[in-house]
Every structure is written in C-alpha cells, then in structure tokens.
Image 1: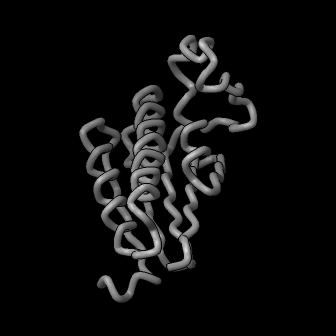
Image 2: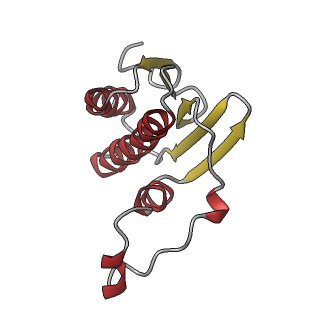
Amino acid sequence: MNRKDYSSGMVELRIPAQAEYIQLVRTVIGEVASINPNLNLGRIADLRLAVSEAVTNAYREHTRQNIEDQIVIRCDLSKGKIEIEINDQGSGFNPDQIPSLPNPEDPNRLNHESGVGFSLIQELSDETVVEVGEHGTKVRLIFNLNDA
C-alpha cells in the first residue's frame, strides 16, 4: 500500500498481553491511519489515544484473568473510514453498565480513578461497538474521514 492508494488496506497486529507492546500498537496504528490525507493531525491524535486505551483495557483483562493468548488488533482502511478492531480473550463487559462520569469540570470527577478509559474511547471515536462472545471481546473503533 502506498500513499496514493489510501482507500484500501488492512493491517493486523498480534501482540502478547504485555504493557510494553501498547505503545507499539499506538504508534503503528497511528502511522497506518496517517496514510490517509483526509484524517487531520488532531483526529490522528484522537485515534492513537483511543486505540491506546482500548488495548490497555484488553491487556488489563488478559492480565487479570491470567490469559496467555495474544491480543489481535486490526486496522481497516478499505471502507471509506478507518475501523480499528481490538480482540481479546477476556470475559468482556457491558458498555451500558458503565456508570456515567461527572462532567470534566465537576470537582466530583476527581473521585473517579478508573472507568474513564471507555468513556474517553467513546468520546474520541465517531462510533464504538462492543461485541462479547464465548471467544472473548471485540471492541471496534470507527473514525469517519473528512472530505478533502
């Protein structure tokens, strides 16, 4: 795939559930997304942060459950948007059961040390889809492309 052919392509990463690979995923997926000229630098930063949060959640779940399987990350540029899929073997979660956080300006927000990641992922991506099945959890982040 070259810079002129930014409308198609899939990149897949398979990483062990180890913290040192999170930055690698963030960098690689950010670079892949930057191939498309319709994604500005601010959106690439959003994408990198959302991917980092999602992969961190997968890593934590694998660590918590002592799962040795790899985490699989796919970045698909072929649908006129950027879709990043993070697949882990954890037991999953229901995004509807995540409590709403206070507004960022609310002093009570300081009482929330965890649970901010998924809210951040939803805020940064244009669409977030969570699928939980017997073989793990799939989180799909969708970033729409701006018209050039």
